Length: 328
Image (cartoon, rainbow, N blue to C red; front, side, top):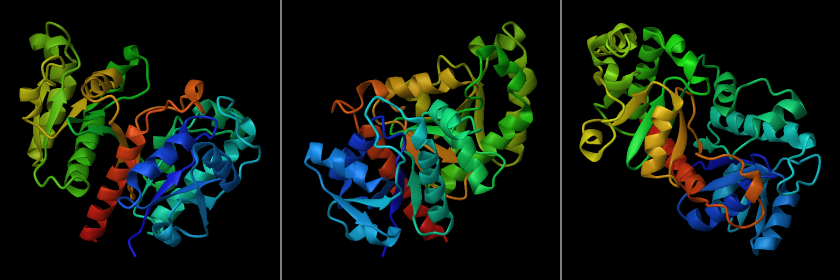
């Protein structure tokens, strides 16, 4: 029997419960997955949506379920839409830990994580990690992982993520860029099936520095990293001006782009395909994807949440998991 994808509960006061049911409706029969969460809560949500829940005792039972399969991990308090509860923070974390344990023991082919509120987890359970990505890296025993946003039109990686823009030049080093390029290269081969991946690297400054007239980081930091990557056998182009590397003809030249900061990477992909972008964590010993949006507390329980990103995240976790299994 083929292993399923484990889906974590995320914050149950957000849109996770309703988009989980929507994903089941869209993917049942195509992508086997199960939710790690509170069965009683999902049954209450399901009644309002005229949807059923099947309680399972192990990941192996997920593929046979005809209703949304849920592996029971109880919440301390009944969740209320739009009202995050600190009392449930520990259970949300436990759902993530359980999913990773299943992945490391090969009981699932990958994990998809529903959105969390880092503040809720920090205030309610002392969660000390900046976010999902860093927590998963710690659970997976790796020092560094990389965030990729993937859509049919574009795959992008920000070299720096959640930091003030003024700190970005100091955070960029040739070592960081080379580590990121190496992780991207392996992931594009292993997880996306691209034998000889081509990676484009953006500049930091306008016009990639304009020969030093608009900053020296492009020549002093980014170019040496590109040179080392090429010497190691990677196909890398750049540094490219950030304003000219995302139109269709430019995108046709590469398989993924490494950008220097958060918005430089996320603005183009969200402009090209806001709904279907998927967050993929590269460099982990297991497959992990997530929808490219947050908890959306403000619209939770109203039936207006778009499940497209979760659907695509589950589909990509399944496809990537099958690809990795075939390589073992």
